Length: 114
Image (cartoon, rainbow, N blue to C red; front, top):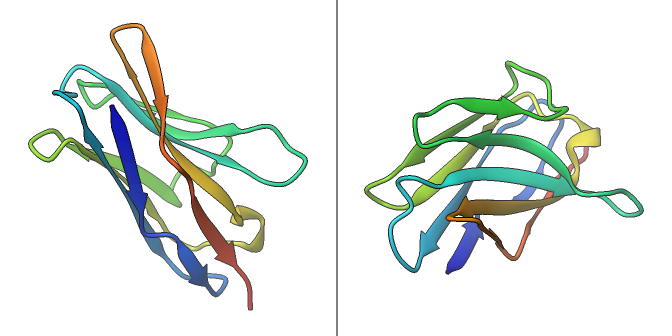
């Protein structure tokens, strides 16, 4: 299984970004797919995850600013982030849990700064 994340970058406070993570190595219709983030000196934390039935689980990210979606035909999970704040600055990691195994993407850096 490989996870290829993209969409990170630099944005000003109040801006938006959309992260994508494409999974390869089989079908992921039944997988839990999600996004975590990590800053220096802190543990990786859940941002959002989505089940196969589209049930979502929020981490500490504020509801209403972030949204997760998935396209099973493309084996891709998306993280739409709006009204970004400087404390959203982190490396964002794609995560997939399938059949008792867990996989991580390489991480994509999101920097929110004026």
